[in-house]
Length: 322
Picture 1 (tube, one colour):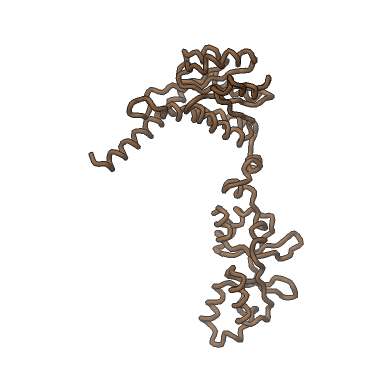
Picture 2 (spheres, rainbow, N blue to C red; picture 1 turned 180 degrees about the vertical axis):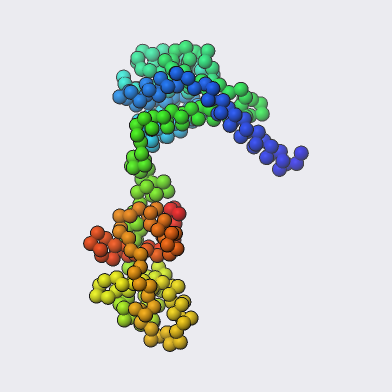
């Protein structure tokens, strides 16, 4: 077997084993899963998710997902918990304890203290007969037949299963809380997702210059204005009212069709009734308009119908929106 085939075979085997492990979780979803979700949903406190090793990494990811979808969650490392971090837990909180074996030293050390706090404990474990399972209020089974590791040792299939269950709990809670795209935008102000949900076209327009010429401006002046403002277009004004737009395409067509181009005025080469939108329109909506109408420029106006700038389609794409 050559090196390339060995790599591809290993990758395919890994994905196949992990996907089977996740799919088998459908057989383990039972009343305990439902009661665990209801417990968290009906609680007035937060969800504290704990684990150690690779399970701790999974716990951190689930915490992040919950916080971004409307469920208050916090991470607590199992080892650090018995050295003071257990103070994060409050009376109305729920605990999710993630462990493949459910029998680690940290579990036997921490569980008695968790029980004294009289908080509900939800186990996510691959061993329903473990110490963790026996001392938890609800047990969600994440048993896997085989790790994707060739030695059946490194947590791979098991952590994939843990993460899938964590995502399932997260989405159940999100839907129960009627978490919508507007809520999502509040928690994701940065990055491409946040921009798609919150960035309006006016915030892009104000970064650009405002190219403009009068209706009787000559070809030379129009060319200078478009080159100077570097947007590939300029608006045409008549007594401070926008009556048209001249783009690079209009310039080329004029050169092709006119013999004496330097006597051509703006009103004779402009595109009339250009598309003009309000500044509070989302950039995602704006780029949809541009694609539908097959144009590269949009004129932006404020609520008083005043011209505030031009946006090129590349301005929007640079923001990570396409």
